[in-house]
Amino acid sequence: MIHKSAKDLLSQLDEIVDACQSDDFARPLEELSHATFGQHIRHTLEFFICLFDARNEGVINYDQRNHDTLIETDKKLARSVITSIIEFLDKNHDDFELTFEANYTEEEGKDSRMKSSFYRELAYNIEHAIHHMALLKVAVNQSLTYIQLPDNFGVASSTVRYREGSKTN
Image (cartoon, rainbow, N blue to C red; front, top):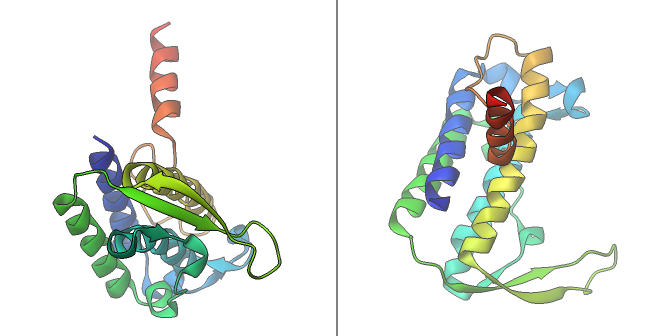
């Protein structure tokens, strides 16, 4: 089920990347604190890429992302990365242990390490994606109004369930 949730979110991202005009994809937007639509897409995808790469070494460290500027400026590449991540999720259904590594200080070399798992990190990636999708939703609603957002874009599934339950009460 967690794989389906991740793939559904990635499919929604693919939809809006496809709909976004190339000039707008790489244009700084005030609503995003002058970041670009593409930078938020790249940032979100690189967390999934870190998870994809962690299967080999068993260590995941989101601080060691590539910050690949091509993903944030080239819509076709961004869509290709989304497709690759979905294909990876289609082929990898088993949970496995990981070591999560992160530095929560401003000093180099202060990494913390803790046990994690593929499923736990996939859940984190889903929550992280939803957060960035909510930010993208603000930009779309303010500056990129030609983009049609999927229903519940940038809304956590728990919030969707809560809203649906509130309607029946």
